[in-house]
Length: 494
View 1 (cartoon, rainbow, N blue to C red):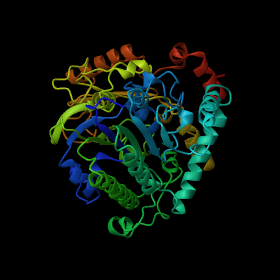
View 2: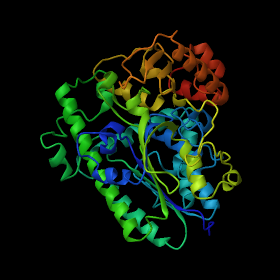
View 3: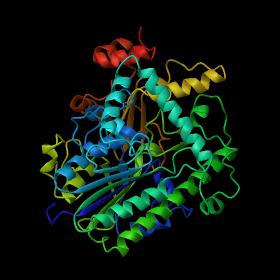
View 4: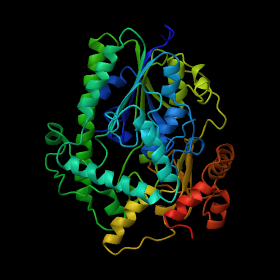
């Protein structure tokens, strides 16, 4: 039994949800009335930054309190090391009942993101107990050697299955996930519990349920719009402004469906008299691009619509209201540890030691380079294969020196942002003008020089992605043998 001072923790990720499509953040369409009501009791963060623009590394950072270069769960090594030590393992060691309910294919035993959860609803749930850990070892073997192309084909096949299920109306597991979370809370009403929930409806493809489709996208036909971002990004299909408008409206309707189910979960906790004793985190792991920067989806970029995500936290030690303090999603690791009074347990499971300055519950937080937030996007091997497949189908050959083959690393300050790219020119932007990375900064501007230096310090601390415009020789000198084997298997190295 955990210490009586610890609180229940509900951690909800609205997968692929943009901040500017939510009513608590000023959106003029009524997509999220339940979340807007929740915001009246929560601290609403307007400048929360995720550590990566896609599921695996973003969740790994939240679960370990580490940056992607530190936990290494990236497209180059798509699994969390068994020795990483996760938030769920820490809370379990502290006596909490733990559960993970998700339909996201990356949050499964084979990527080890479910380590430490007593109950984990995912693709492998029905298999015998020893099978998931064995599959994790098989997945690591597939991705670490000459068999990497097989792993990438598995991912591509999984995407195809996901698209077909969505088209048939069988995509959303959100009602089932909410049911499971409610039952879990009921089953552990006499103890303390930690429930992690990932809701996937806003991820492509968009086939929203009723009545949300009729209310927010009555004239948008899901079968008539482009539902595969790789087709657009590869140049295999054009999308008009009118079509992107339909896509956004379908996206809004998907968000509304999640909001309704989130409200059902909140209402259940209130009826069960667990609301007051439960700390609640609601965030997105990353956002989505709908034509901005000539991109669609959440690959090949680290722009703000992808990484400046919604974050709302209900906790008795946090006053409700909005804050413009810039925070990072990896801060949630320390916030949950403190909430659960499980700070000492982290080191017993191999986790990063609790850092009180990282916890959002601490006043006057003091973090080295804390005025900056950092984002990484490692070489997009999984997405690149799918992109090349779409491009090849229409006779397009992708440029070797393009963002599609580039590592990226960004540092963000409330005044400006610097993106250090691998195969394209680096980018400097103003942030304090209220525009979405449209105002370029000269590299000699003082804030740009400051950002460059901060990113150098970050890379020194974390062994982050390589410097801008890195050539093959520099990359090879930094790669370990396993990475070289993976790239050779993919045809990038001779």
